[in-house]
Length: 205
Image (cartoon, rainbow, N blue to C red; front, side):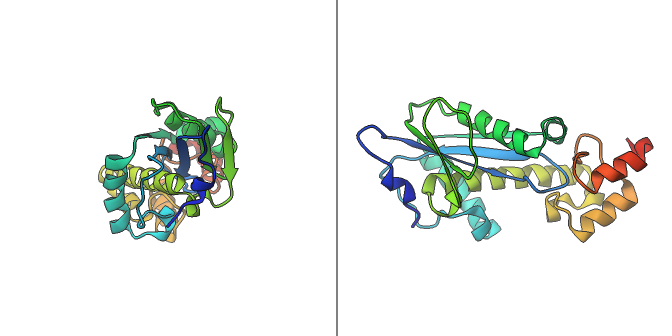
């Protein structure tokens, strides 16, 4: 069971917000972030880093986390916003947007290795999503929310296969881009190979 944050609870730290993101690496779609606060007594042996869970388990935990969290927030930054800010800065802004949705008082923030400028103390923890329950829960909310978004996108543009690869640079996705071209407002123009495709074939946009 993930319990690293238990080391930080004290008389002055009653509630901790865990924050994580999903979708920094794909060529298409938004980046998502989530923030989660559990009661310190809450336990769930199934919650883990979203990458270590099956899709079925993530979907199940997605509902459980939203039901049992004292508070949670889910936010996204679009492909255009990623291109405007760069993926690193867009991810930080996305995390802050998720944090702003936490309306209950909290005392400490733990992120999965991401420094943020916040009013409350923050710990940027390496592999936070594999050590802290709240951060792992945030990783699940972010991942499932993003997957749902990409599945809806797949209904609009079935030729790209977004439901299967979720926007990552798979052979299937690259082949679809080569055949149909990148999509305006969906593919990240600042990412290679989309950037070179955009510069060479401006007319497609």
